Image 1 (tube, rainbow, N blue to C red):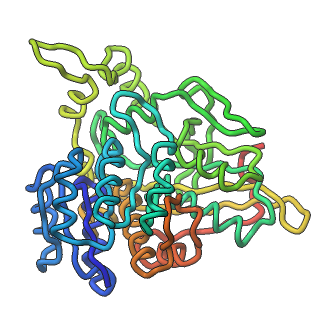
Image 2: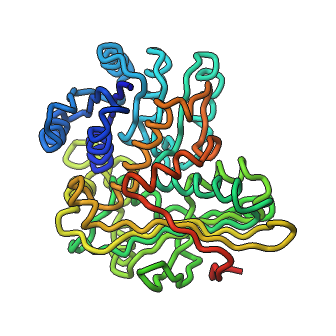
Length: 398
């Protein structure tokens, strides 16, 4: 049906390539590209069947991206590279006339900012070019936003309170590791907390607010309020929300390691001079930590991510909880990746499918909740991320 260029050969890129390769009726040709071609070759060889072609590309270099895109002539570019590279890839898509999809918002390399404003600024450019840009099509952001849209469409007249809850109850057996790129992960979880309430943003200190929450099939886990990018688009697209928050679980050992890393300066994104060379501490840290794509083999346990929503239906208060649990072992057995990569890669594949099938295709720049959630929700059940609903339950929040 369509040709797709995947940029990025980490854990998420591995999952996207695996899942697309299994659907030749949708993805007729697949090209996997990265700065390090040997990573792409290893993934392609693992998949086999000559389903995935590979190439080398520097995603920071627009002319190089343009050359690759023109040589392959894809229908869609799926960006699962670093968030620093979103804008260069979007620029290359505009220059070549190809639509775009990613899983995370743009971040400046020199500042820990998690905002959509840079990508939303491309709205008129993509609209005038007749191209589609689909933003944040992983799990969170991504599926959590689609869960919200689905709830608003089918179960509420007005959604008022939203709590996105993200639990990783897995064990990778390492003293300390991050489940996706350490540069991005550590920046994200060490920033100040932020949530939406009564028409304004409320700032908190990192990990200042936390509660024990109960997760399906897992039990009680301490959950910390952090800022996550989908909140920005959700409060914009669902103005009835009186409060919107994001919670993530962290183990005490993880938090202790994180504090030490911060206290000795290894989480810094500011360059320093070492032996006459400029290095960025967090980039050095990334080099010595286990690679996220190598964690899967001995990973046990599961993730549980969902939306807890309160609002009005037929004039009465209603509560609703929609979630997915994903096994690390099952994800690894299928794709060679752990569940955090799997839960990001599968939605990216489904989003690409939605575009190629014409179900999510309109000129401009859009967050996923601005499309029809129904066909996407159906595909989640078919491709390894089944979801479950609980109605009129205790959400554990006021």
